[in-house]
Amino acid sequence: MKGGVGGGGGGCGGGGGGSSYALHPKRRWKGFVVAVLGLVILSMLVPLIFLLGLHNGFHSSGYVSESRNSVPRSFDHYSNPRTWNQSESFDFSSVKDVTESLGKEDGNGTIVEEATQVSPPKKGLSTPPPVVLKPPSGTNHTKIVAEVIKSVGESEKICELKFGSYCLWRQEHREDMKDMIVKKLKDRLFVARAYYPSVAKLPAHDKLSRELKQNIQELERVLSEASTDAELPLQIQKKLNRMEVAITKAKSVTLDCNNVDKKLRQILDMTEDEADFHTRQSAFLYQLAIHTTPKSQHCLSMRLTVEYFKSPHDIEVQQHEKYMNPALQHYVIFSKNVLASTVVINSTVMHTEESGNQVFHVLTDGQNYFAMKQWFSRNTFREAMVQVVNIEDLNLDHHEEGTPLGLSLPLEFRISYGSATNKLPTLPMRTEYLSIFSHSHYLLPEIFQNLKKVVILDDDIVVQQDLSALWSINMEGKVNGAMEFCAVRLGHLKGYLGEKVVDGNSCAWMSGLNIIDLVSWREQNVTGKYRRLIQELSMGEESALQATLLSFQDLVFALDDNWVFPGLGHNYDLNTQAIRRAAVLHYNGNMKPWLELGIPKYRKYWKKFLNPDERYLTECNVNP
Image 1 (cartoon, rainbow, N blue to C red):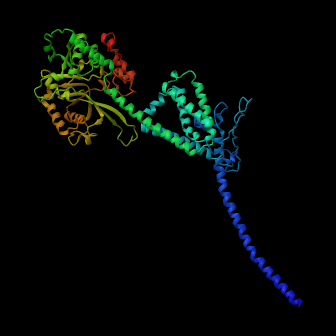
Image 2 (image 1 turned 30 degrees about the vertical axis):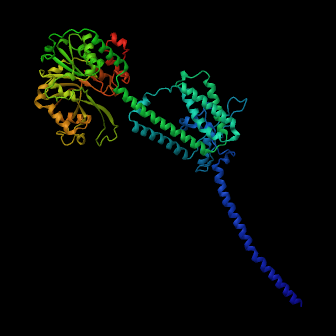
Image 3 (image 1 turned 135 degrees about the horizontal axis):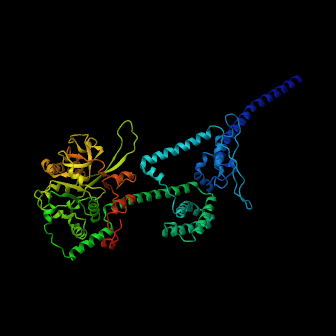
């Protein structure tokens, strides 16, 4: 019985032992699951701690303080940390983040000393404690600095590539920034507008919201009345300080970063649109200023026209024979500008020894004819004679009846070109203004039927030497003596001129100073050739360029480069010695010397041939 009981007990015991071993693996499985879940949660929390900046003293994840904005302003100090001093505004917490991201131990196991964050100075302390910053000894710091320098160099190259020589000119002519307070006000207003919508949504910060709104309105009112520092009110510094305090409070409030980011992007887009608008507006006003007569010169023309009809005129006696005497030196000027044509005539006469042999024919339109007539009857140019011709009143044999004659001035085309050789493939593009004959120039053989040779002078030139030598030049049977522009050859324009180009190596030529052999012109029938090309092309002003270059193929005599020096109407960087040596200065381009857009340092060569004591110039306030 005992044995049975014992056996039963043993059986119970065995059964009990069997049940305990069956439950033990389940408990181990539950423990394993709990450990895995703990590791997963820990792996998620650790990156969050670093991302939220909790490892730096559990700072807020909102916007950082304003002192971080000073880092870009101290960009130059990245290259040499030892040059930092206490007087410069710099937040070393950003450098600390960099050093921590680089690692606290270099490859050799050396511990890198961290930069401690500077706490704001407390009351009673004049200066914060000095901070010693040591860059990491590894290669990561060098890599970061190299990447920064590389990015700066690439941005300069992109700037030069996009804006051309303007970037180089801006670096050479950099000036101190003006109106710093106005620019700072606009910057603070920009920041306040970005924070205000987010602060206004927080009921707990109604006072701060009202303060921001009030400061924004005050600065907007100030900037609407002042555009320079001199126009700002005396109490502007107090308003700026109040705005700074309000912005500092707004930055200390925990905000939704997405809202501030959206507002900043919205303001940035609006600013870009405004900048684009002003760019287009300035381009339009620039073109308007180029093609519009200044108010003072319009006054001069009107006063002269009125004076012409009020005053009696002497009948010209025996002047027509002198005007058409082929033994004299005849100069032709196409112009609608009284001042421009006056400077051309006066500068030519002042540099000649025998002004009695010179005859100037000023061809103008009906609108400016009476003003020109009155002006040149009041003013004399030594012994030279001046004839004013209204091109609209001419009765030409080959002109179509019923079609009014109109004056067209020399045309200017802007041409950009660069090096096409393999040796210098990276030369920057250059821009030149190519001036050519207009439709009116091809009427010269019919207007001056008794003359054999004339010299055409554009109204945007200044003569600095005697031009009498031009009349003794042997043109070798050519029609047009002009300055060649070999940077552009007809072969380069073959796609533009078509298959009618005879010699692709022929250089383009420019108007400004041209010797015209009217006898050869009539023999070659240049006018007829030009009219046929115009009818075939019929492309507006562009057809005039094509027809002119094709009409004078193999008919151009190249003048020496010392005769004409172009570019004073568009090029800021010209050689002063070359300007003084040239016989003729050509202000080709948009910046004519009689306009406010004219280049100031070149305007003096033009202005000295005007008489400032002339009564009409004083009354109309003409002071180019």
